[in-house]
Image 1 (tube, rainbow, N blue to C red):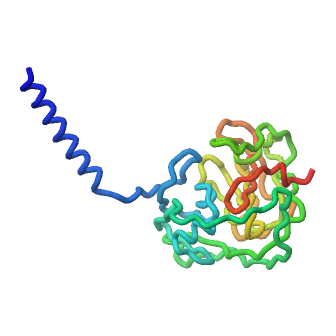
Image 2: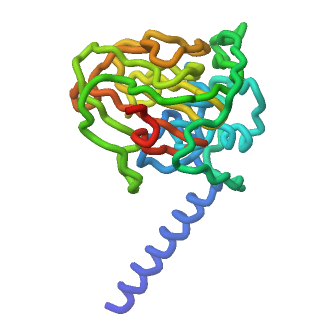
Image 3: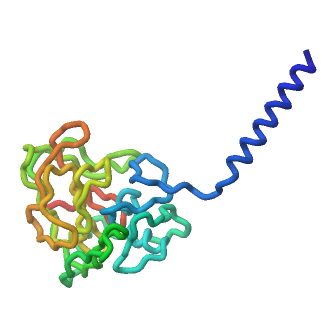
Length: 257
């Protein structure tokens, strides 16, 4: 009986040894081929057609400048399809504290050029130039309707506001800025528009039915940019977010009442 047990133990040890050797062959983190969800682990990312630095940073909850710095990218942030980007922090830069009641950041705006397209669209991703700084005097409500889910800073909480309304009703830009993403690459957001207002603030408008602006387009505050659609649960809703230096903030602190 003891002999049988010893043989089984030896056999299990051999299997365990080869399993460990096999796992140790690749020490690097795998590259994610699609956008992660809000709960997926942060790993490397392989650039897909239509991606921008801003949309990738948004999906991973990062400041686009940190993402660029980590990968040695400089303006105008040119990306190639299939390019592997690191998406985990190695040395995180310190962030400046900003008063909660201070949404106004910059005063001057330099009108940007239109989106620049590569001569080889099959191999590269188009990009937009870095906009100048724009003064956000006040933030306008992006849609008419009732708030059905408020912002929550808790882990796994809502990163913005969910506003219900009439299907196909207007979605408007909360403040003036440059459209840095207009697409549907982020599964959890459906058809998504991201607007860069200045060096610190971006806003996002998700679950659109129809998008009326393109990347590289400058929009005015209150301009119609989309129509309201349905989320993944089939509810007619606009999911609206404001991010300061890559971090979600409560839109109710900014929106003009």
